[in-house]
Length: 75
Image (cartoon, rainbow, N blue to C red):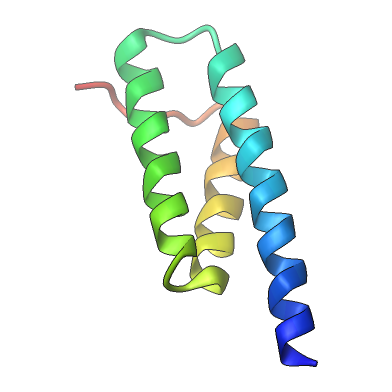
């Protein structure tokens, strides 16, 4: 039973990561901001391999920030 919920969460995180990547690509922001967002997505992807619930929380926070127009500072 737990494995089924883990698989479901994995599918949800994968779908949300695709959505987040598309959203980042479509943003009209400086390249440095886009790179910072891409790095955040890579961190979430890496986290998903070790701690899926934490990765889901990180992704939720990142998507909320994007939806509210809060972007990281570029380098």
